[in-house]
Image (cartoon, rainbow, N blue to C red):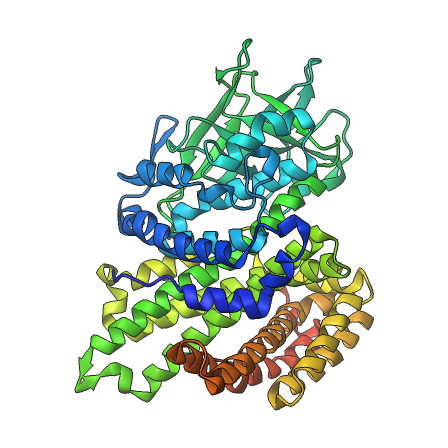
Length: 570
């Protein structure tokens, strides 16, 4: 597996020209995000990830997390690398200041998470879930819970998990059966089984803080009857020290296609009738509280597509330069096509996810329209980012040829690792349904139409992009007036159209800036020329592909149901 170079120049460029980080730093809440500090974080996070997380990527894949009688042991080196992360404060970037965090923009936390995940995607899932737990507690937790748990989670001394899925429920969260019964002292007795719990058990930290969805007595059916509880692996004893086991047991871990260094656990709560939890937010308010964590996680899962995309692209370019087939294969037009597609897809997806992260920060600042924009961009970032990551990783295998199918090159691991990303945190089909459901019909299309107008105003003159904008506008009007099954049938191609439109807009902006900088002689000329070419490739090759999906977005659902189930299976 080849080494890689942290993409610091690209990250800083996108921060400047997509996120517009200087605008964020102009607000009092983010005044600490000076240019010097941003540079230090961008450079330092990449260097840390390369030194500490990257060397463990291969052993994490080959050895993986090991379960034995309820305990999970991480591969050699993981505990030390995680300790280094905590000691160097990399988990504190966006944490609230009163809990020991630095209170910096979410966008800078995104940079850190990207670098860690590019170095070692499976390992970084631990950091990703903890960040979501911090967000949920900071927004919904009581003062007592925040005081007790947030400092440990922000520092990384403890890690956090998200517990939704149950064996019988899957994505139907409303079908969960876990229960919570009040004890009378403010705690609740939790009982039930959760599956697919990322880093639900490990030996990196002494305590793990589980956020668990469960039903209280007499709760109504469905999602309206769900509450959220904080359930620590170790609970406080009579003196307040976290030494008492809390009747939470890791029954097993899954044997997966990829992300082998991320223990995916089956957790059993209350086998002995003594699992204590504490309510997060109001009773029956569990879905609202959990969505705070899920929306954070969905953006960060979209980021995983960029992580794998960056690593796979760099390794494919390196291999193509050195692999001789009469001449270096990088000279062949089809290999150039694949490499340029990989590079432009990675940069486009990064632009989309960073733009969404910037809107998270603007929403925090109370900027008008930011909340609606981030709500709109979240399903795009999650779905398009992860689909792009899968395509890039697959192309990486293809560039390696037969050697790509051999594990030793590392190309196959990237594909195996990223393949889960379109599935978890809400499948990409669920993201598409969310886009044409709540996000489109909830405001009558206002947020999407505002985005369309902004793209029109800034990217006028880009022929293919303007054609795609027109097609998105037509499809939007059709989806707003058709019935629900027709909307859902066209939801995935429509999501792709909107995603590519948004990426095309952001890439066109960067291309203009890069061309101006090249002309003036400022900046790194090699990077700037590459940026102008990858932008042009995206606008001239990938945008027209999305335009071709307009027919599918508005075709309706009748053909999907023309066959009976028996005929479909014939």
